[in-house]
Image (cartoon, rainbow, N blue to C red; front, side, top):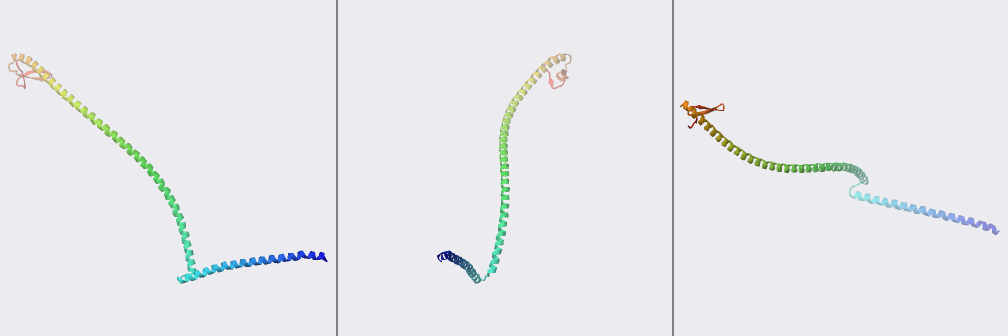
Length: 204
């Protein structure tokens, strides 16, 4: 009879363990349900309080939700516009940056041209001053040479006239012996011609 009792002992222990496992699982389910109920109750209580607060200010939950949805749509639309504005702003920034670079290049070219123009102007003024100085010097020298030439011409004319007068006196005084009316002379065809009543008088 002893061996049979020993064979039935493990079966009894196994039954107890299974029963204990079912109790634990049931407790866990009950606890989970309690947690869910508490969470739902909390949210329901918060919703109830919010509804009462909205009623105090004359608003309904539906209208508030509708307005919130509208605000969300407006926010989404505004964010979309903001992204578009950012893209446009980036494009504008790149355009401004390019134009700024072009402006810098133009300003550099302009400054270089202004520098070259100032240098050319300085050189021109220096050359003009030098030319004016040289012109004045040449003008003064030319006037001196002209005055000297005038003096020389006058002296030459005087000598020439003296030579002509001397020659005319010799020629016409001799011819006057034959023609007493001769008292002057003229130059005709590069020759001395004795005459009477002319401006150039002879002296015999």
